[in-house]
Length: 136
Image (cartoon, rainbow, N blue to C red; front, side, top):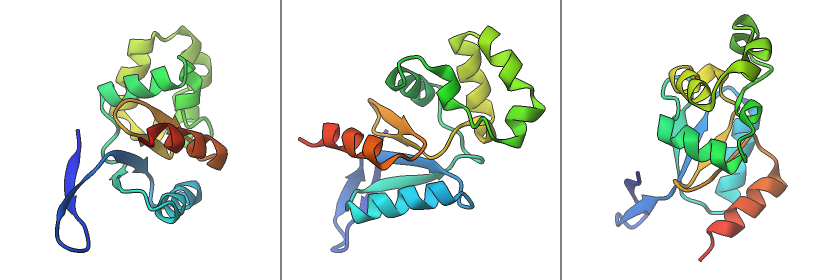
């Protein structure tokens, strides 16, 4: 789903990229600076308050070739408190999607999507490759 905004001339534009982030996360701030430096338009979404939808999580899981563990913030307190390290291997893809859609703290961030594909975490070389695929 694209969200309208305005450019500096007041014209409506569409933001194709959505970045789910946590404002106190240094890595997220680096990712935002990276997108700004590249001149990309994006929508910022607070991942803890508004986790990605189940559909968006499915898109990301596909983008990660089904590597479910990569979707998790494995260093987070919620991950440890919920003993996800031991539970994750026995969960189905749908159970993982349901769990993540209900708890943004469990999701690795930043989480960048264009609606058809995505990247998670911030590694500039991976983001470069992702953004290059989006070019017309």
